[in-house]
Image (cartoon, rainbow, N blue to C red; front, side, top):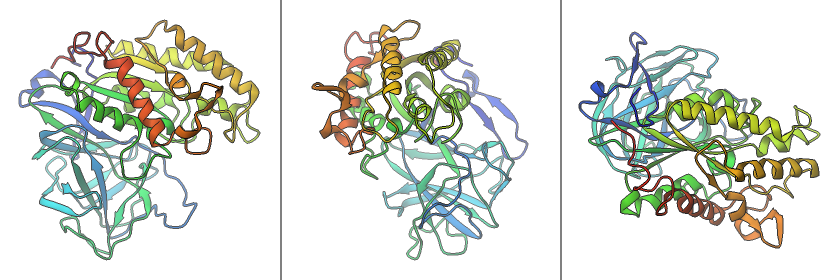
Length: 419
């Protein structure tokens, strides 16, 4: 692993599943930086209409927005949480409109020199590097052809699904559907001439951006990325969203618990230099909800989880910042005892001992007249999740407390990772 806070990145070739550890010698032609990431997610049942989990003799298209530009790309396919091997026939990548119409050249990806393959259970494959110039905040489409039955284990998104056949090189699927379905692609890296420091936003639905306007990239990590792009001193920073809606620190449920997924979804992100951790409100909520599965949870348990994640980040030379837990009174799982735990956890965070700084999300979003509640105009009506305006407040708060002059990630305080 290189110095300066860069996380280790494991790359598995499709042919031999060989493991390569990123090293300066391997970066002679450039520096690999995470440009988009989606945490792997277990296979889930269909619970509503317009949902699909299995594909047979079909093509599936994911459109993702890149957080960094470069002159080469490689795409990560995940079966880490799958229940069976996943066979794919061909994968392409191309510039795209937001609604999945390809624009310009279509590039076929190879994996260990081959166009298709079978990803074993518990593995992830990263494509061979592809010469393709991409730009920051550009949309690219990753299209996968499944020649036989496949049930990917991936984040559920609204994806484009073609009529029967291999259509991955076609610009438009006029008869396709757009169900909620799992995406096989979980990451895109780009190669840049100079290294770019990456900030990983790690958390639950408030990080992933639940309740923000769909398709507009209004979650707080994306709005923070736009703020950084507008300032010359911080323009090289890349922000990666590693949130999972419903995720918890201490217990599996909506994805693996944070303690289990922190390595893959934070420490191993290519180019990671710093992490913002905002998680724990689901642990508190479900601990005191009759539908919960844990029973009462003391603040010490959450603080212990934080300490473990802080220790692991610092062992990798990565800075870690904790966000105070936002208000939740009025939410479906609110409870007076849970509110006491939230206040105790926030008091510990605000003391700021043992980690690299505090982001006062709670202070930004709480109602000054009713400090245990969200500001009404900045939440989406469930007393738990911000709306677009609330996420903008979070982004501004993170920017001011991390990147303003003399703050811990300002250009003067952090020159960025070394290549």
